[in-house]
Image (tube, rainbow, N blue to C red; front, top):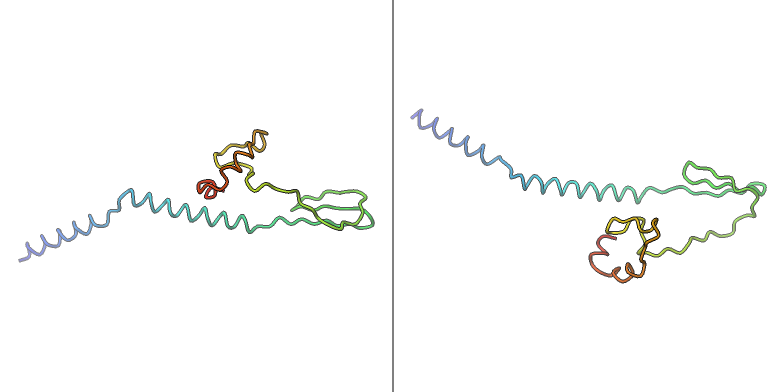
Amino acid sequence: MCADHTDLASKGAAQLHTSRRVSPLVLQGSALIVLALLLVAVDAVCYRIALPVSITVEHGAGTLRVGSQVVALGQVAPPVAVVFEAHDPVVHEYQIDGTDSTNNFTLDATYLDGIAQSPYYRFQA
């Protein structure tokens, strides 16, 4: 009876040992999911960080502060409005294919406008 009990115990341990093995594909998939979630979290944090910008005018002398940088503007009139340059929503620093066409002056905005509504471009943008 002891031999049968020992034999059953060793079979159970062997089955338990083999059932704990995880497929490499499952591990890779899990790692991919974790990395994707980490990427989304880091992206969200980056978009929440604001760059402080301020303009001060004292006694006619203007000072521009952007982050930790300070730029003396010299004699200026008090500002009455801030106007941002118009921005084309399809133009990014690096395009979906990884090129740096904005800085290389090879950007084809007409092409990008043409594919801007495609599901692939909208997902990547």
